Length: 382
Image 1 (spheres, one colour):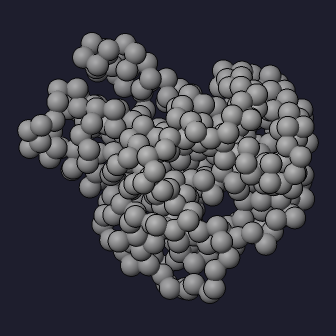
Image 2 (spheres, rainbow, N blue to C red):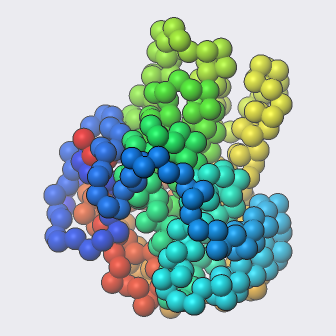
């Protein structure tokens, strides 16, 4: 099989969770990522009716309120107890598989309207417990991945019609990419491509809110993104410099966020020096910089100690039981993705053969869902 260098391809979406016919053609390489094309299929967002996601059924408000109880600052025992409580309530609140699907639809829609809830949901789904957790035979993490796919496919419409929902969809993917690990400890590296596409979309608007989110996600994930696709990250930095110099409608606040992105890169996506931190705090305000700095403290995986803290708690405190059979099955399938070829190591030590990923499969489910496959076609539509 042909070995492919680090880079970003073009084509259709990044993750297709339906079973496809044989797909052995490797995508071509391109130095840039195009935003996904508008997809008018039933699975994509239809913004023509101008509805908002708050119109969804409120029958699961109690379940959502329990997810809000999660706190990244909880110790491992307390966090696992809360997760166990949520799972028990979820099982009680849903009678069958259809109820679970409906409940997750409502939870996801609420997350698109509430960035804080989105952070809590990622904390739940990224936990070790949810590697294989099912509610009435529905794999929750797999459902979450499907939603990320739908969000990405509908991102052009979503960005245009509902900018805030679009930003929260970016946050969902970026935070999950930063926090979640597969059963064997590896990162979801195939998400680097759509996440880079999202960053491009945020960068092109010039809106301070978009640029704020851009910098936060760049700070969280830039180290791994740079190792996965250094040329693309270099291209993004060049766009930032050009935007600062030539964009005449760019506000002072927007330019400050762009400058901060360069500072972040120059400091290798680690903590900023005190004098630089103070400068941006004075210019952007305490609240803005608290969001910026706090996001790194909460979700960072740039050092080995930070990336293992929560997982170590959860692996040592057996509050919840996880099926070892399903984890073994998942790990065995994932091993097929890394037999030959390699990309640059992320903080998790992940190595992948991009030529295999482009036509390979990944299953993030328990043993009774082993036929549900995700074909990794990591190329956004032209």
